[in-house]
Length: 273
Image (cartoon, rainbow, N blue to C red; front, side, top):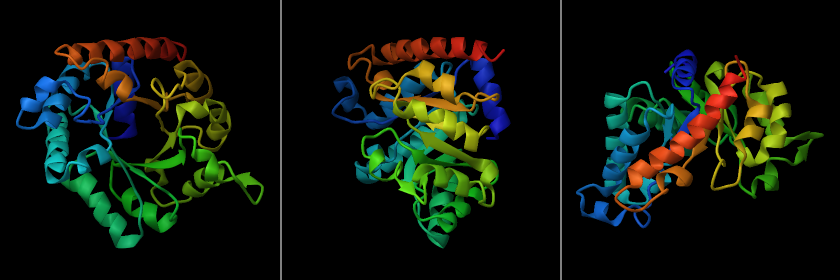
């Protein structure tokens, strides 16, 4: 999917919501555990109930890998279901990969060619030769971890190196990579006050912003400081939507939470007009 296609979907749906499909079998409705594939059964109902309210889904692969081969099969079924039934949806493999040379190429093939994701999250610590193999794939997107929403982000990401915060050096250096037009960045919603300076470095790049909802991030602040002329934001909510209820009405409850966010996003988008 191209950036232009993603922007078109945002304006069509009046939403820049990304829903995280982080499935924990101890948290899903108990009646689904009787299904042959409880993870896929849960995802399918969530997707069918919310697809018109969001523009992206983001399965965190750890929640599938934890269940071994069965979990990986559930992930494969989920992405195939999305691509077959809702091809307009932008898909993100939240895998946080990152290795050098041929290893990165193989990771990219796994998520882009085999599974058919539109994008994958990447840890940039190993530098250029760990990122560019992902960027070589046409109309696919590489989402670099820049400034994350967790408390440990301050251990390294905001430390000064030669007088400049490390996350800013990541942003500036990544712009020199071959294929950098296909880069997006992770910036946590709990770091909204940093967004103005981030936008000075990458004014038009899309930002994947986790942390709204359960982690306490504020949507209005993120939009104030981080929205670009082409919107440039994908706001992710996972637990706050998919676990809105653990009863028979779980999909309906998830849709209501998604709609609440979508309506707030519609107001923010109207400010761009």
